[in-house]
Length: 174
Image 1 (cartoon, helix red, strand yellow):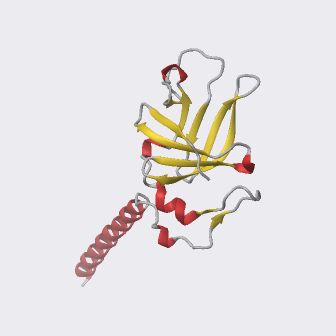
Image 2: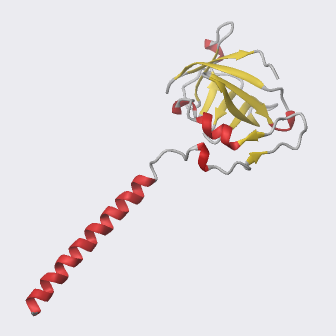
């Protein structure tokens, strides 16, 4: 029975190792799954503004519409003003080899609904103005700034890929 017992234990140990490997694989794959559906968020979760003129944004609205933006947009973009046209503003990834300039403004979209408008400060250094974005309709994003530092903006996404972001600022209807 000694050899049979060893064989049995060896087989059980092999099965246990396989099961453990499958468990680790499943855990790893679960980290790659998409964001939870909006139905999985509590309905009472809101971003609340202390300012009466800034709207309250429901996190379900953000989660339901975030996925409409291309993944390439979620980064910091530098304003490539040299490429702007009359009504289109052109942005390039912040690591792009821009021509020399006295500071460079930009924008940043974050996948959690945050938005930062990067402005040129008094010493030509960048300064971020925080806000939030949400989809209005296909290719249209509404941006709200915290404490109403700036008026809301509506941006139409004309083009977005890994090399360029082109937007058109639209009139805002409150």
